[in-house]
Amino acid sequence: MANTQDFNGKWALVTGASAGIGAALARELAKHGAKLILTARRVDRIEALAGELRARGAEVHIVAADLNDPAAPQKIFDATEGAGFCVDILINNAGLGQYGAFCASPVEQELSQVRVNCEAMVRLTRLFVPRMVERRSGWVLILASTASFQPVPYISTYAATKAFDRFFALGLAAEVARFGVKVTALCPGPTESEFFDVAHAGAFKRRGMQPAEDVARLAVAALARGRRTLIPTLNGRLTAFLVRFLPVRLITHYVEKAARPA
Image (cartoon, rainbow, N blue to C red; front, top):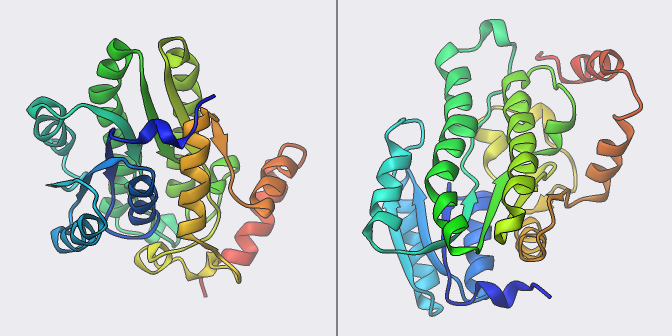
């Protein structure tokens, strides 16, 4: 039976590893013996994390890259798999959001969400998964969100990108399962991280947000088992279940009122 021991000695590439869930996933994978390739645009952050993990005995490699740049996925591939690293675990964690009325938000910020959350994820997956298929082994984690189960006013683009991510993960999982490659869509709810501050999305903060470490622990275990979707909170699972039976117009009506900017 598959378990996290299978990660021992394997190279894991973690995007967006500079903070939050990405950093927590890197730490969790290291606990299970994985060797880490950390990538993010904030070099000082990943260097600090790399130092922490090396002090604990992990082997760590760094690739600085900004996934808002269309050339970044190829740069990451060339510096890893192209340089002789055998990447068996791909963690597509990097992402960003933006809170506010779509008609008033900077268009570049909206497009950046599509580039990073969708385009860069697809590019990276397309680069690394063929090698996994050839080796008949591999794991891919794609960060979606509980926001992927329904439209969400005032983070409309973000929620749409996460719906894309979740559906992409589920489709890919079915394609590559026969080759021994496991794909998991991780759908966390509000998590303790800097995401809400960076996205100016304080309206969506909740009391008792889940620690990033708990999300990472559950995600790594689910990835090892080949679970195709993980919603790591009970509230998130209930929400995902209930929205199947409620009209979308009703959901968006109440969310719009609750989340409307002051």
